[in-house]
Length: 317
Image 1: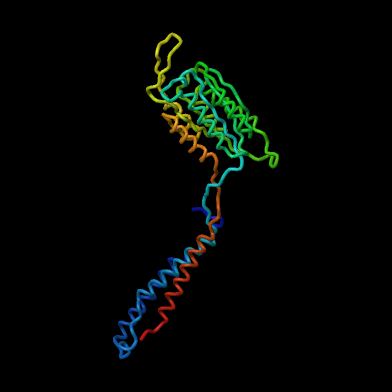
Image 2 (image 1 turned 45 degrees about the vertical axis):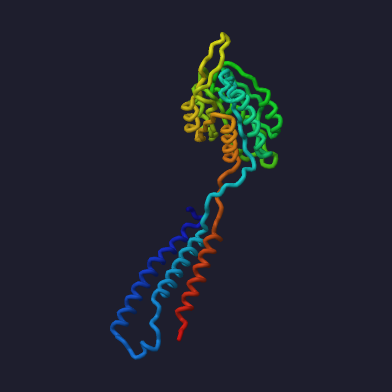
């Protein structure tokens, strides 16, 4: 827990002092009663219910503690919807995405899920589309025209080779074209890369180097390892070639960049992954003062303590 005025917490030092004072006073009172012995009034006036006194004092101390915490203005982190952000959707369009271990193929299922993901983005979010195979292509610069991005996703086709590192660098370069917010041109807009691939780097710069550069630019990468270990494609010569999904490289990219790694082995899982990513990138954690919460609890303890003291003052026949 954090506080906006932590110096006020020094008042909590009164709590152990009051507890010690109460214990000493209780001990002195007990000794006096022992020294006084039994009197003729003991049968007329019922003895004081000690547990009620302890309870009233305990509630008073709890009230002081919680009210002091409230006075120090506690704060906590809460999730609130982001107003603006830039999301780069980076899709692997290498030949291995032709595998049919996911119906109707890895690429076609990925296109459907990516389109739904873009459709779920808040209207003010800029979305960019980057594809990578042996080469990279910035299909769409960051834009709030999400329908345009979806149309471009639907038109993607396969290309040979896989260059995950180059795909990351192309995604970072696309962030240079983020349009300014007309209401606040100097505002820093957070950016995230959502990268889907089924393979490992075959050409280009290492993905690990690209992930470090993304971290330096404060751009976490959410990676999705898409496919199954049993995936195969048919080569131009008619040979069946295994194309198992590679989890390790993508997991490392996510870890190094400060993002999160996912895996999906069918279209349903992929939709769930995109939905989880959307819920993550669509909110931000902000500090919120919760003074009223602690003040309310402190007031409740104070009322209960007052009720306990009132019961102590009563005399029942």
